[in-house]
Image (cartoon, rainbow, N blue to C red; front, side, top):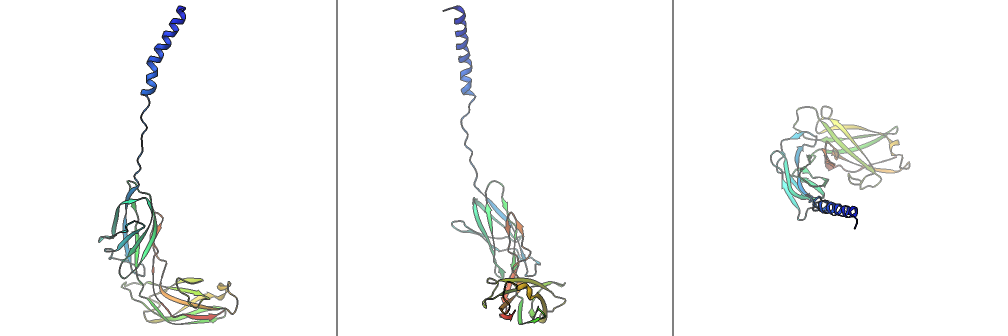
Length: 253
């Protein structure tokens, strides 16, 4: 073999001997990443009366994490704090209840991980407001509602007293079965508990979806289903509360 070719052959052998092992020593074993799909769900629950005033009654609220199997639940401490540990990633329903309060619930998409998901929310006293002795007049195309309202509150100042009105062409109208609804406020300095009230409900033109001559039915509740619920991380508390329903009254368009 010519000397020149022999030199090149030894150079090639030397190159492979030194650098080929480095190709393997530079590679690492494949790493496996383990995701923590469990986590902590916690928060504070605030108690309110039916008029939206804060109450010092935040303890012993029952909190259920619906969707767990078996179902897990806990009670709030005196500050309204609750906590669920080692919760699996899933979508749950957080359900709040306490005697004398309206049950509240909302959907919670839970991802897990090391950082706790904090969901503050609220619970409302069941409304004790009663609306009775209802009558309805249609005057020049406007609806005027009269009745008597009875309520109780501990605040020394003026409060708004919500009234919920539901209307349908179904005689079995209720807050769960209606075509039209409105929520109005009476002021305590205008209407004392046990006194009569008058509410202007607006024009009959608001019911343009019905034919003239249609009989419509109305039921009234003290309180409202929509109040100052707290929103956090996609969870919306269904704020407010309604009391006992009134008798059904009717009117003709």
